[in-house]
Amino acid sequence: MDVQSFYLGAAYLLAAVLGLCVGSFLNVVIYRVPAGMSLATPSSHCPKCKYVLRWYDNIPVLSYLILGGKCRSCHAKISFRYTAVEIANMLLWLLSALLFWQVNIAYAVICALASSVFVCVFFIDLEHKLVFDRFVLMLIALGIAAAVVDPYYSALSHIIGGVAGFAAFYLIAWLFERIRHKDGLGGGDIKLTGACGLLLGWQRLLFAVLCAAVVASVVLIVLSRVKGEEDTEYPFAPFLTCGFAVAMFFGHRIISAYLSLLGI
Image 1 (tube, rainbow, N blue to C red):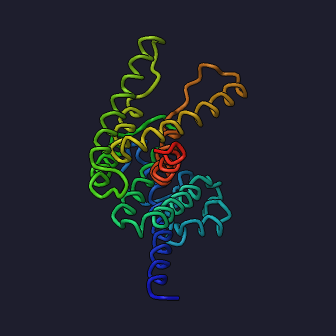
Image 2: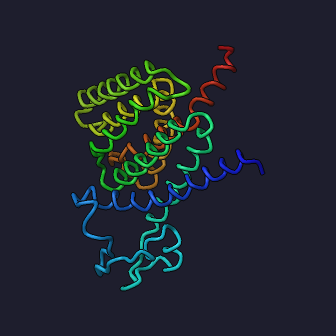
Image 3: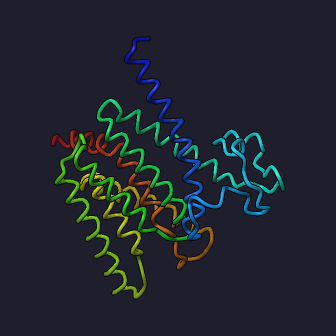
């Protein structure tokens, strides 16, 4: 193994380990932000018996397996969601490194951080139907940085994406409210799309929204048929964040392949 391969492998391993550790912290964010709690205090504890977790109870994934998915003190069941968040964030950070580390290290870091924000938005909106402004602001900051270092699209593309994303979703929400006399898109979804338009650029934003709309249509039709509830409101941000993630990682390649088929 040559030196370059060794350092590259070390970078991938570091990305995976850091992704696991950050994923553990994201669980704190996902639980405490909707409850209006501090992220620093109190210490992590069992919500049922208040047992304060020791460091060996907080080892990502491993502690869950050792404890058998139960609290060490009261043996209450621990939701697998905590482990799912850790694994998902690890895979997303590793994917950021695999795809972009050799292209542009700064862009790889931006994608990893954006992935973690997507994970938080996904699970919080899925459970609470809320998209908090702090996550939108984080994505705006990452979008500004991405506009500077993006190896695929220009800063102008990012600016157009941010403006068009916000304006298009605001218009859709306004028209839906005027025609159906009820909310079709929440304000959080509108701001989230604008922020991610700035992060991705308008080309990848179009691809992301298309992916989100198609998947959401299929899933919601199935759910409405299974549950028999036609007017039930479902959160849209989980579909959006999945579309944004796919576009961020693979959008450039898919768009380029599609344009090449068209001879453009």
